[in-house]
Structures are given as structure tokens and as C-alpha cells.
Image (tube, rainbow, N blue to C red; front, side, top):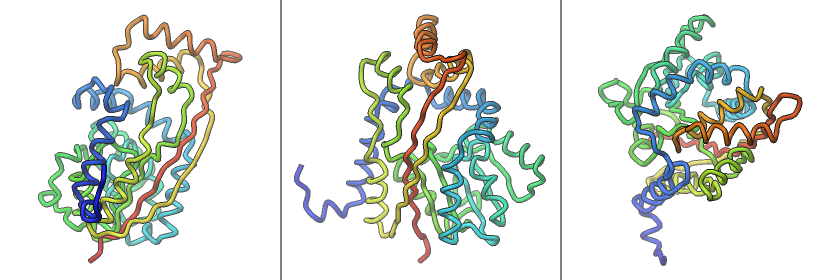
Length: 292
């Protein structure tokens, strides 16, 4: 397709490219669960997810927090909005460095866990609210240009131009969006995806570039830093099978036959009663100023 310079400077071009890329990714195209079912799923696994967030491989959290601190976006005066916060993966590291952290997440249970943890930690500057980002009315919430940093990391809440512009509407300072570059790797999930769907699990490598270009043509000056981490996770066989079943539940019904297939795969890779999974993550950390 031939494009002239005028088209390349059109926000619609990059917004549509982002939408097309997202909808045609294997994860999105194969999804069979409704939004309500997805929220119920996150509510159900929230306690375990919160525990994983607490003790898991958080090199990415440290790196990203470091990036934002270096750029002066985390400081004692900063009021932060954390979109798609989960159980507080970033909200809690941000809290000691900021004046206030407001977290929003679609899962009621995630928010409950976050608020409970904040109380246990004695953090009075962290508060979570159960909201779907698409349903948030920035003006009615009193959030128009109310935050020094609007932050979102690896959340399906930021799924298009409207969601992105809502972040901008809430910011009087900066925004930060963390998104996969598509270069990460989980050999376990790739192998099982191929087994179940007879196709390669192609993770989208264009989304972050479409977002960068969209921000550029609507008048912002985004910058990108990259965060790469790798880790190995060991689990007992039963926990590994359960985790993989949950991972694939979004895309298929977990029938006894499917669970048997996953169990056989895990058993093949088990050593001394433990299943070891190696995971690599590659993230783009996009930041931009919203100041006039």
C-alpha cells in the first residue's frame, strides 16, 4: 500500500493500524470469554495473583520505577493515577516516592486486595477503586488534569485511541504506558499453543510502534526506553498444570481431555517433582509530557 506524507501524519491511520494489529493478534482473535467472564476470572485468581506479584520476579518493576525516578516523574509532590493496577504491582513501589497513588482496576477483588495490603502496610496515600477504564468519566470523577503522572502497564484497559486519550485527559504532567514489544518468549506457552491450535503463537510486534506514531502525529513528543527481563519459575506439577489451564481458559474450554494433554506436557518436562518454566519479557516504556 502506497502512502503519501499527508496520510502518514493522519492520527486515524495509526489508530486504525493499532486496532487492526490488536484485533488480529492470536491472543485477541482466539479469545472466547466475555468481558464479564474475564472480570470474574480475575476476581477468582486475585488472591494468588497478588501473592505472585509480591514474591515473583519483579526486575521489570524495579527497572521501570528506576526509569520514572530518573526522569523526575516520581517525587514527593506527585499525584499518580495507576490504570489497570491489579493488586498493586506498581502502586506499592510508587507509594513511598509519591504524594498520592490512586489505582483503578476492573476487578473488584484486585482492588480489595490492594486496599487491604495498603492498610496492612500503613500506607495512607494509596487507594484503589473498582472501575473499568472504558466506563470512567474523567470529568465526572473530577480527574481532568488532576494527576502529575498517569501510568498504565500491560493492561488490556488501554486498547485504543479513546483509552489513550483518556489517560491524557487526566494528566497535568506526564503519561507512561508500558506495553510488550513482542520480543518476549515463553517456550511452554508457545509449545502448547501450537499443540492446541496448530498455529504459531505470534506475539504482535507492531503495537508499541503504532502507539508511538499516534502520539507523535497528535502533537506529543514520546520517548521510549526498553525493559528486558528473564526468569525461571519452578512449581510442583499440580500447580503448574492449574496455572497453564487458567492461562488457556481464555481461549478454549478446559475439558478433561485438554487438562490431560497439559498434564502430559508438564510431566514430560518435570525434574525431581518440579516443572521449570523459563520466561523472557521485553517491554517498551513509552513516556510523554502532556503539559501545554
